Image 1 (spheres, helix red, strand yellow):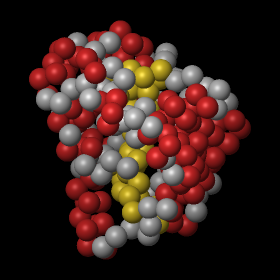
Image 2 (cartoon, helix red, strand yellow):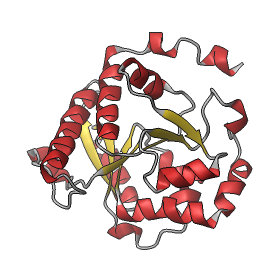
Image 3 (cartoon, one colour):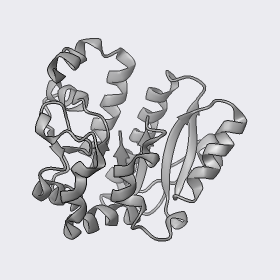
Amino acid sequence: CLYEVFDDLECKMEHAGKHLLRSVLQLMESGALVLTTNFDNLLEIYAAHQATKLESLDLTDEKKVLEWAQEKRRLSVLHIHGVYTNPSGIVLHPAGYQNVLRNTEVMREIQKLYETKSFVFLGCGRTVDDTTFQALFLEAVKHKSDLEHFMLVRREDVGEFKKLRDNMLDKGIKVISYGDEYADLPEYFERLANEICNRDVLTNSWATGSPSQTGEEQQNGFNTQKSLLQG
């Protein structure tokens, strides 16, 4: 039973996890969109405790997905594999996505996001190998190397880091290290979220410049526009 698997998720969440969710919610309230491959609804639960109602979407509701891609449902989380609270929307096989993949209007709007916004990939190193993600974004988007997306990863073996970085470049994704330990991520992401939100308060528009950057961010080429997150 899905509910047994995901029961009491919030109770099992550590302080660092809540720290990270707080930053994601902050970005959503500033206008960022969130797309996730996770089946859980931890972000929605956390937001509810902060008096913010987030809606969980899956690809079965094509009308809402289209509105999400058109930035008309910013306080919604798009679960491309489904969410456990709606078992009928969970997809475990690529065939389950055929309806939305055949909807040219929805596909066009989703792909437009990938071409015009900056994605920040968070905790999803293998997401770009996911067949659904590739169908939604990578296969139809041309000139991917000209795009500016970012993937936050833990600093590990230098050789592996360079290999991942080189592999992602042709997909338009720049790999950035947030630190040596997983525990470094919440603080790094909080700082990034604050920079993006503070900049947007000053410009009061879709920013075209970059936030003030640390030496590490400059070295990694981190120059974000209003971010679209992938959790």
